[in-house]
Image (tube, rainbow, N blue to C red):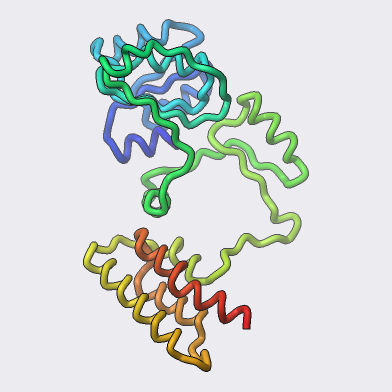
Length: 251
């Protein structure tokens, strides 16, 4: 899915690298222009040939092991960056003089922002990116799932289902579900106006000493009206009116 996302956002030529031909085949089918099996060929040499001897503008490492990052550093063009996402771990020995002279950037990435999440949900809802699910597990198969993941046997994502226990995965407030289910794009002016309206609504609610206004309904109606999006909306809905709801629930 990362290949789909990178291609959708940047429109760049994507080169996938792995030691598993099955995964490389899947990468090709999901938008990679080229693939490199680093177990069968010289990865750095192959990458340079595919980039006209220039090197990559960016490398995203989903393994983040000593050996993979050492390879990453050989693939870069001047002013390129390496983004470390994986959790394998290890140590890295760097030629420090190349960091300033080649202007490389080494970046760690764990999570994105609320805005990133909303944009990601939007891309998924519009079918621009599609999840790759290779395995589905029941809750009592958690150990098996983790073992397969550790051994690199899961392609894309493995899903654990709670349905056999009768569990339902629900968000706390209906408005939160609406935000995820009815995402649309708003202009900056609309967002600012919506945020102001939310602040004003919360102030009015606070003035009502008898708390006659139903905080939960207020939040739900407000979220419905705004069509749920952007960081300002999420912050307003949870931090502004969310405060009112929590206070009402405690009474």
